[in-house]
Image 1 (cartoon, rainbow, N blue to C red):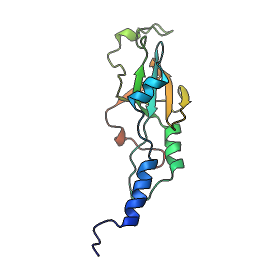
Image 2 (cartoon, rainbow, N blue to C red):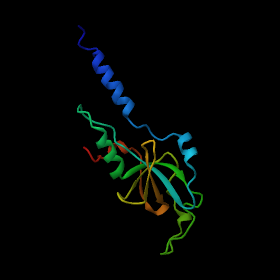
Image 3 (spheres, one colour):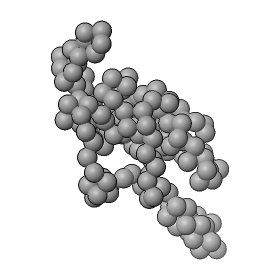
Image 4 (cartoon, one colour):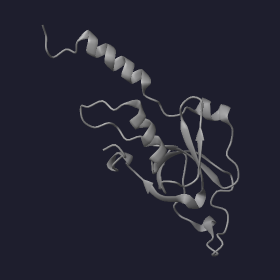
Length: 145
């Protein structure tokens, strides 16, 4: 028996685990959902890649999505970065702005969570709730690590 090739049982288990992984929300799903308004930004929480050999139960991935502080920008409202804050800061002069596809750090409990029937969780934030553009989200430590 070739010990380097995975067994049929191992391949079947891997296939089931791969099917259970929630993939990022698609453009078609976003289109069907609707559009963000005003200065709000829709973020999909980022789930860090699993490290190590021990398989995580789905409940851990669910917890990662809920307590995530990093997310991928999926929609930006038409008036984002065009207002002034109450302290007089003109956001239209900001050099660093969120764009679709980028990863950003935000406060853990910021914004409004949106739970979709597909299992996806999105977060609705304002343009001032984004704190830091993250170039490589895998460099940040996740909840379950």
